[in-house]
Length: 369
Image (cartoon, rainbow, N blue to C red; front, top):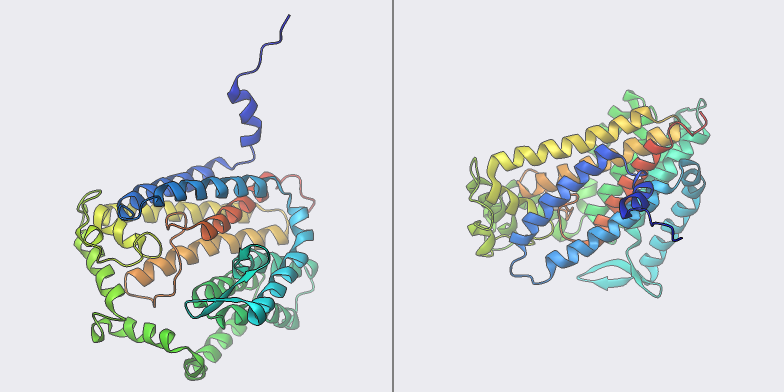
């Protein structure tokens, strides 16, 4: 007498319970919007949609693995992952591969970009650091945390990779801020940062200075350095209230928008779906951030609260900086739009972050407080 096999759904269902329903739905909706937009933006780039679907599958697998990893294991991995990341960044500075004037990659049998590791390793390390000093926080603890943040941040920015450097510094800053950084110190840092701008300007690369100047007046070089911003803002504005319609964007299909499948995909989306589409997308990102902050607020330990809060605000930084730069209110720094821009590395990093949030939510009742 043969045993009847259970339905496929009953086999798969236990493996899907690790996913947080609300967070998964929001990510799925943003990914869907991204694929629809990428299909239009990448019509002259054969294989982009197929490649992105593969990237999504990889990110999904990474998300599932991360959702199964307990916060206790993440706590134990924090120092080794941070140490490996900083070591690889030093190796990049000494032996890294140079492409387009930047030394960002390292060949260790496969070509890797260690700065991507630090987007997650940085908040992991600082959350571990403050967890170990819970109840004993003094000003010197924040000083040590700042040093732990500045070292990899400096190594990344000097590659040069200002976009990734800002994301790593931002992720670390959020942990320090959520840990209870006094407002007096925060105001002091702001004043010191503003006072140091002339010094920072002198150390910036020429192309970085040009990007800032183009932010102030892109029309000073409309066919050169200002071309990206001018064409992007034209596309966003021409979308109007309801947009020109899917596949009907003239700026997009006449190839006026540069990097339209990656950093400037928001320009394509705005032109074709208009203000209404932008409001829908903003609501999705607000829901993503809101769900992440809810998970952080319900987390049982200082480590998980800081980690969840920092990862959530990293999503915010991605979206804010990307939308700001393509709209002409921030300098162009090469930050992708989360879960929408074409590319595997950033998508996997975002999937890893979402998986960690799901792990924290799933294990919140199992973690000893």
